[in-house]
Image (cartoon, rainbow, N blue to C red; front, side, top):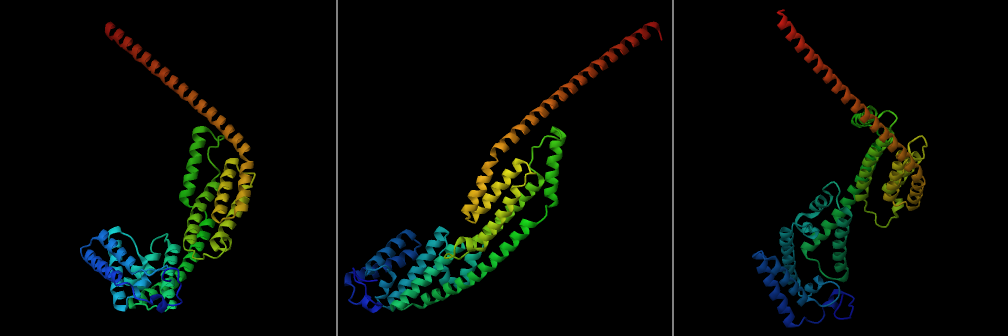
Length: 366
């Protein structure tokens, strides 16, 4: 922070030398205009005059807020009140969220509620935002600048909220991983069994028992479980606040790698159809990519690629069987239609014969 290229060692040095009277007057004039615009709920005008006020007070360096404090506590307090009021109008008009404002108006409880609500909170970015608020206020203190009472409340709320959010995040990750373990190892549900059985029975009834148009039930069941598993792993990742830790050391990434190994091992089962194995290889790759296990992902994809020619042959064979089954179904349908026509013809002949017999009996007087 400093004026021009200078870098004063503390706040007092930074503020040394009075601000030119014209700029001080410009600051106060624009601040008054901002207050008037806020009272009229004119957001565009309020933003314009507020920015003009901050430019007038600016003494150089990276932060404009601290330049305002060189004008004294009373002026700084008025500025801070205006700053908060502008944020209230901005968030109200835009329907947005401002954690600085929430810290000022609702304290730590409001921050924790805002950041952690919802199924997939954008928690990492919010915590970074709060840490940046606290860092900047602490930096002003270290520089020797005073903190206004409202700023002290915001600092305390931000730090307390981050601490509580981190505790909740750890618990949320544990809960998500427990749910994932249950999902991955659970048995098939009754509904899943009924759906798979119905599909297979329909295929057998319509196309014949030898025609396989579905993947093995055990693969389909695993696919359903993996979908649930990935949802829980994504939940755990969303709560992860460790930015300096290697991804592979994170609990959710380790779990994804373990699941990938399990699925990859199953994909190597030669008793399964190539279609089923292809599905499993793809699921293993999905796990590895999620956990950023690139070497394992490349290996699984290579194994998947290696069965593509066999898969194509299997698909061609099944396609031929389906075409044959469909042809047989058409033949049966045509035969049934012809039989029905013959039956109709026979019935018509019977009716005609009956009419002739009745006429003859009437003629003979029977």
